[in-house]
Image 1 (cartoon, rainbow, N blue to C red):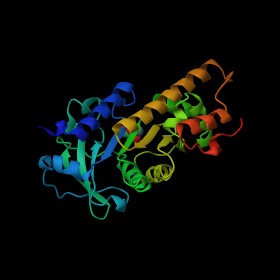
Image 2 (image 1 turned 90 degrees about the vertical axis):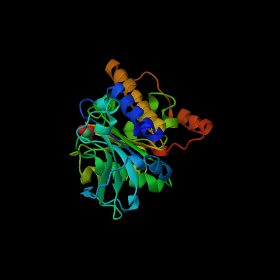
Image 3 (image 1 turned 180 degrees about the horizontal axis):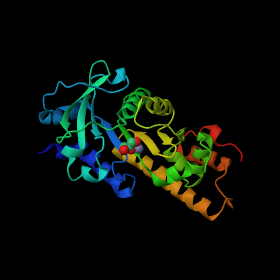
Image 4 (image 1 turned 180 degrees about the vertical axis):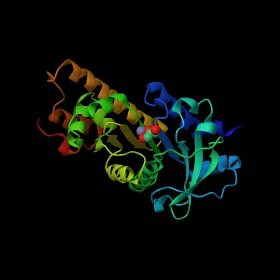
Length: 275
Ligand code: 2HA
Ligand code: ZN
């Protein structure tokens, strides 16, 4: 049995390929990370090599000290993950100060973890805390229609959330806390990581203006499903806006309130403003 037969590695590879097939990962676009469970670490330990080469994360994540992550590689293509995982992805360990990492498996032809490692790890740190350890997946994708909307909708979480909710009845059930927005920033560093992780305190999705989205979830199905639902909703909105500037009818605030009762979700009133 190879490492690619281990369940969580299989799930990771499948999700990367699903994202590629959706068209969200041109060239080396996007990145994915998974916080490995303790019992899963013991399933893959036999594949680790000795490495004492500790590198700077570029930010501090003390609450992730000594945790293990499976992550995509910087400059690697999602398209290739399924064909050659050992070249495209890696397992890293965070040190006991939460400032450094070392590579224990993968990237066998050289390379480093994703350029967005600071954002991934800071988001993991926040989500681990606010979900009592349940959330394990952070996903960044260049979702076409969400990106398009960041040119025409105000970069306001209230407007984005409400417009996306209106596009499909089950949207508020899938992302009841709404979506947060990061205005355009230089990607790949600590500053955008800090802004994104602030959003993750409250939301499971951060839209990066003119760039894509970050989604967080408990497992691969929920996280991919969340990104997929949001991007599909964005696609419907792009179609609607392309046909007309004015919707003839839509879902009303009181109808959202009834939906919330029947589906047992809490929808924040700030998203149910009268237009
Ligand atoms: O190229 O998507 O945001 C990887 C990225 C950086
Ligand atoms: Zn990106």
